[in-house]
Length: 231
Image 1 (cartoon, rainbow, N blue to C red):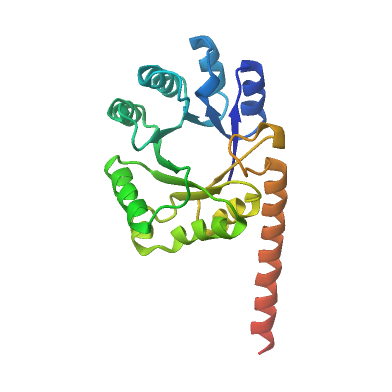
Image 2 (tube, one colour):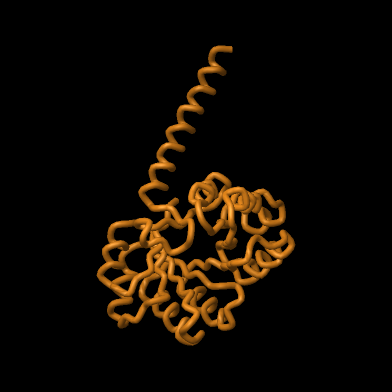
């Protein structure tokens, strides 16, 4: 599945995107809208509410995400090391909002033991999804992030519900390949100019890759069937 990630201070722009696409991550980093506007945004489609603003206070982040859940966000992304996460987790449980427990490594990929430790914390948060993002400096390093999907302990904890993604220059196809490795969804941008993470491909390109992959898998399946029937 493809999720469109959007970060904007224009409510009309965000509402246009949430109307056009079925699954959207709304980054509240630059959000300064009223309750009425928040309600407009989160009542349109299946939305993930996220806030990664490093300038506003933790209390302001909490208030934004609580309001997003009240107004219809179906998923909330909570950083594992967020100091006030318990209040968000309690509200998510009360509102039947699914939780993504996320961790971001901006200085490269950590040791596997560290990732497993984070996954265990995510499990203790009753998160449905565990998201780990690693900044990399080459497509080869990006490919190594995908090996997380084959780590037995991570499979045991979050099989089918782990989102491990590389971030960096020219890693768009590796991010897309996360779907092939078992990610339930990946993040895309409406266009290159509005990418919310480095290396994020556009929805249009990812949709084409997905269509090509489905057609290839379909043809391969029929070829296998023909081979079996000819024996």
